[in-house]
Every structure is written in C-alpha cells, then in structure tokens.
Length: 389
Image (cartoon, rainbow, N blue to C red):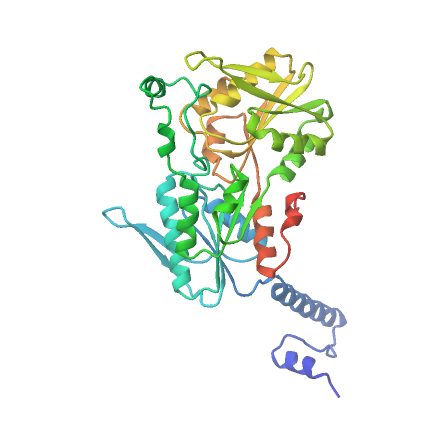
C-alpha cells in the first residue's frame, strides 16, 4: 500500500516516482532535479518564521534590512510620510492581526521625529490587533537624561553655570527633567510590550519600564574585533575615559586577561581648566579606550592625548554608539588614533566617508538572534557573552 503522504505529494507534483526511460542518464537527472526541488521546498518551509513581522522606521533602514536578511524573511510593508504641517503619518501596508511584530527604529538623526514615528508605528500595530509589539531600539534616545544633576565645583567651566552659582542658585539643576523615564512611559502607553536595545547609557533605565527590557551588550563583538584586528592585543591596556565607565572596562580587561586604567577629570576650582589624571601605567602599551557613546568626541580626544603623553605606543577607541555631532569628525581626523571603532546601532556610512579612521562593527546578527530567540520563547542571556556568528 503506497504511503499516504507520498501519494499526496505526487498529486501535487512535489514527489515524482522514478520512471523507466530509454535514456538512463536523463532519468537520473530528472530524479536529481526533483529531489533538489523537494529539498529546496523543505528548506524554505523550515527557514520560514511564521507569525512574525519586522518593520523598519526611517532612522536606520540598513540595519533593519540586515536583520531580516539574517532571519530569512522580508521586511514588512510600511509607508511613512509627513503632511505639509510636518505631522508624521504612518500606514502599515499588510495585516498584522495575531502577529508577533518587531519595529526597528534607532535614536539617531532627527531624534524627535524618529521617536514620534516609532510611537505611531507601535500604536498602529497595536490597534490593528497585533498579538505582541516589540520595539527594537539599538540606540535608546534621551538615555543621557536619566537623573537630576546639581551644579557643583566639579562641573565644566560654563559662564551661565558660574553666574548661577554666584547668584546662590546652585540647585537650578533640580528642575531638570528625567527625559529617559518620560520616553519609557511614552513607549509603554503607545502599546509596546517588549523593548530590545543595546548598551544603555545607564543600565538602571531598564527599571523605568514596567514591561520586559532586553539590554544587549556590544562587548562580545568588541572582544572579537580586538582579537582579530590588533595583533599585539596581549600587550594592550583597556582604558576608561571617565570613572563612570570603570565597570565596562574591567569586564573587557578580565576577559582579555590584560590590565585596565581609567582617566579621572580633576578640577580644584570651578573656574579652573580641567586636568585629566591617568590612573594606571600605559607606558609602552597599546591603549584601547572603551566607552558606550561619543558625541562631540572632546573627552576621548583629550584622553588619547593624555595616553600618548604617558607613553602609550598606539591608541584605539572603541565605542558602541558613534553619534559624532558638531566638530567630532574633524577632532578625530586631527587626533592620534590608530582607529575609532563603532557599531552600526547608528548609521555610519557618511561618517566613514568623511573620516578614514572610523571603522564599523556590524551588530545586526546580535539583534537578529535576539528577535529569533524572543519570537521562539528562548533565553536571550546567551547573547550577553557570545557573538552568534
């Protein structure tokens, strides 16, 4: 009795039984063609991820495309446009009912417009009956506004701040907003069920949410880059450009089994120019500056000069989020870096064209694997210490 499954396949011309042929070579090639076709169909079925949709905002379409390429699916259809009064309009171009939706939008470029676009996309999917909406935010916007700071003697030299201090208004920073908390509230109210991000400026921002937050780390990709691109990495020293990054630096140094150092900005009086105190010995070593982000690059450029003065043979800078606003590119071009390495959580093509020292680590595979594991209900913690190549 022929197998029922095979009979059904034969009716659909997916499984062709071998036939007698005057030309045996032709018969064998037909069988091979059909087997290859059948194997291709099976692979396609296995590679498909059912009930998942990935949409891209306008901030970083290249990263979104890389993510879906690694997942083996297509980007969802979405149209974003602005009305004449600059209001944002989003139209989701396909059904998301009952789907597991992922929206990729980074905090870069026109940050306020991109944030609003993300909120509208989340809400559009939610009210279109998506079963779950996950916001994939590689660079979290407003992450530096995570606490209230008061003015003190350790602040930068700034005429307005000095004037405020003279007027006994030293607590003026107590009226500063905690904008990162506001963004967290907005995402939750819009309808986000889950957040995936990378290297939050302060890990405590996860606590601003009442929904799950997966804060991925660029550290595994950074370690891989160091080992593959710095031949003398065993003679290196990992340096933090400020005291706040000491924990990040010690973690990398421990995994590389090398020493670490940090730079402390010391100011004796508010009106005095800052001096940078290096804590650690970098003489005759390759110094690798590590930080979570660089904006105008003033800190890392001064830190690099201080390391060269202290006897470092080469200086590299490795940053997760390369914002590079204002004079950043010209400062890097004029600085003593061998290379400034960033990830593509923010688009870097333009920066790399303007500055040959900038190199980019692709982290799309980490986000793609995080999306796949989240969709399948698997643990994401493997990605905290491994690169899913």
